[in-house]
Image 1 (cartoon, rainbow, N blue to C red):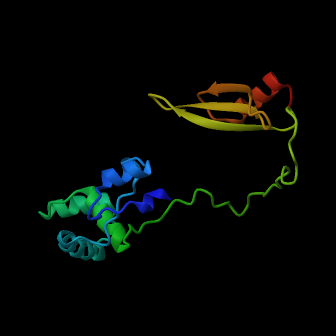
Image 2: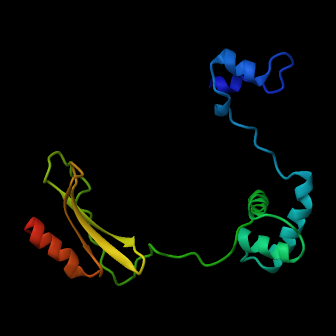
Length: 175
């Protein structure tokens, strides 16, 4: 709010003095973003557009590598910035990790209208993987929904249903 009162090109007061008078740190001022492409980037933009027509699957990394091989010295960050300003992005098949299989059953969400007020009223469980030097370890935890306290947990080297069931039966007493 007060940052907009600072005028960088003020004829009598420097930016430092204006910030001092307003009680604002200079590092909190938002720098003016450059509008559009710079003059020196226009040739790069033309070359990127030309290469993008031949290889639309190139992102900033591969585009930068290709341009450097073509003796057009540039950096990946500059290529990424110019591609973003031009509205270009790599065209490839994106992963569909959340698409359900048509044969899978859709279960109702039982907690939709429920208000959880007390501890031990609702529990949740989750399994996550921990990267190790060779492979993964899997952590299964049971938590209380209200207090977010971990009630039980177990680590395994395999990710199977028996591992998760054993934590539920042995440490929490239910199936």
